Structures are given as C-alpha cells and as structure tokens.
Amino acid sequence: LQLTVLFGGSGTTNTPNGGVYQTILMVVCSLALIWVFRQAQAKKPVGTKRAFYQGMYPVIPFLLVLLIIGLQLLPMSIGSYLYTTLINTGIAVHTWEKLLSLAVFLLLSLWSLRMLTGSMFALYIVTLPDMAPLRAIRSAKQLVKGRRLLIWRKLLLLPAVIVIGTSLLVL
Image 1 (cartoon, one colour):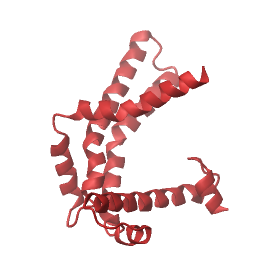
Image 2 (image 1 turned 180 degrees about the horizontal axis):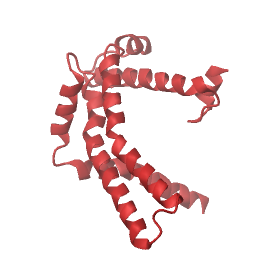
Image 3 (image 1 turned 90 degrees about the vertical axis):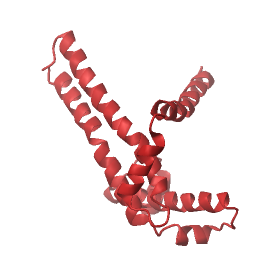
Image 4 (image 1 turned 45 degrees about the vertical axis):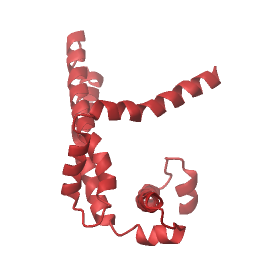
C-alpha cells in the first residue's frame, strides 16, 4: 500500500507516512542524480547501483542545507499567513489596507526568494567532498552575486513555456 501511495500519489498522500516516504525517496534520488551528473561530467562509468551506494555519503550536509532552505522560507510563510489572516478575518477592509498587506506579503516573499536563489545551488555544492553546509551556502551566495534576476528569469522560463503550451493545446 505504501509503495502504491508513494509512486501513484502524484504529489498527494493518502496516509500520514506517505509524505515521509516521498521525502526520503526525493532526497535519496536527488543525491544519486547529483552523483551521476558529476561522474558523467568527469567521463567516468556510471551505474545505478554505484549511484545509490556512493552518492549517499553527503546525506547529512544535504539535509542540513535543506533545513536552512526551510528556514529561509519562513518570511514568505509569515507574510502569507498575515495576508490571509488580514483579508479573511475582515481586519483589512479598505483598499489601502489590502494593498498594504499585499505589499508586506510581496516584500517578505521577495526576501525569501532572494535568499533561496543561492541556497538552491548550495544543495549541489554541499555534495562536494569535505564541504560543510555553511561553507556551501556562502559559496553559493558568492556564485549568484549580481546574477539573481538572470537566474530567476531562466528558472521561470520553462514553467511559463509549459503553461502557455498547455493553454494552447487546451484551446
């Protein structure tokens, strides 16, 4: 049953343990894929068994960087909570109050996205040998310095093309 939920859920879980299993599978497969990409770049032979055995050594630093990413999402979560609370409870009644709460949400979201830009590269950097999580975060921050808008433009291009293509197919 858990295997069916894990693979057939398409992002939804029917049981409390399904989300845990999906998270574990995502981390393990991500580390294996990172190892495969590194080996392919170095033109070394790649195998599935070796990818899952040898790619798992940085699991603790990888999870620590994921924890840091979770902390970086806190401003966006707080902004979202404040916005929905102000709008749904009727505290923000006038247009200027709604716009002000929306502006606070957008500012907190942009702050989170700014921090996340470097941290998503830190997930790859932390898998290098002898790399500490905070050192990986600092390296990633230096890597994206002055390039954040370019990175987000490239990251958002594919979902935009998919949405437009799907819309055209539906129409």
